[in-house]
Image 1: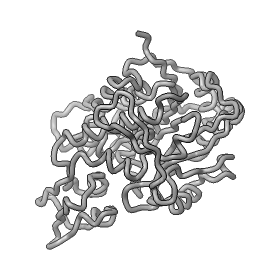
Image 2: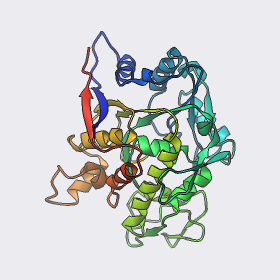
Image 3: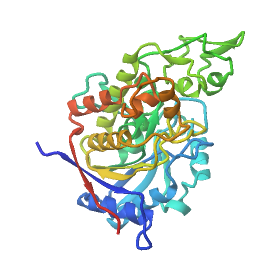
Length: 377
């Protein structure tokens, strides 16, 4: 079987071509114009950035994709779904405020922003998952399913629960309604390593369900309230919270793959990822830490599985940024080879390969790819 094609360009520029122009050349070379966009509604799924986080993709990149879609006759809109946790994007009004403050307005991107699952995160479409093993019907934001075509524009970075966030995370978790996100996260609950806990209360601040509490400068989690979203894991500054077993994260990755299948199946889809500002945690955090590796480039493909695999491979080939979370973890493990999986080393207990293997198994895409570089003008 032929390998999936993944197109790549680095972040180098010349006076002949800036980064937005380079992104346009990349997605056109990758074949985006093979899709019939004429008078079609096009959902461009991306992350608008949690207020306080500065690692999210700049709206300038979104504007490039919008302009290309419009030039091909499409009717694009930028979209995301509401979050499960406390923060600046938990309902559509707050979410729009965050998007506009971060530059995702019609004046900057030349298209509208639509929060796909409505004001309270309950506007959803139930989508049967082809070849699904863990999810029978995915709960996807209605506006995303109303679109004729879906494009994912992803910021590739680390993630405390899934190993990395890329195309599948953007599509699967990002397109799930609030109840859909809860379904993906409900495989397990976190536990507190009491001896490491310093009682700072960060876990209490980020939980939308009042599950953590601090007594005698130690955290306890009420598992009857916890939905298993894992937000507290990334918030803990001393890594005192973790999932009860590694299978929890593996099930999460598999469910994300099945939700991604629901989003993409039976309609045209196209995907682009930028490996820049590779923060160790998701852009859902209200802060972003030092990147774990240097900026690498931009990639595009019709296959989201191949795209994620290519991005992960490229990250793992990079030097480690001094002072980053990954660097800190490597220092705690004397003798550990730097060639180890950077993403898993940055977020111990994660296994990103499980999600891609499952996505391939259910027919979403292939892990084998041909990397095609378009170079610099």
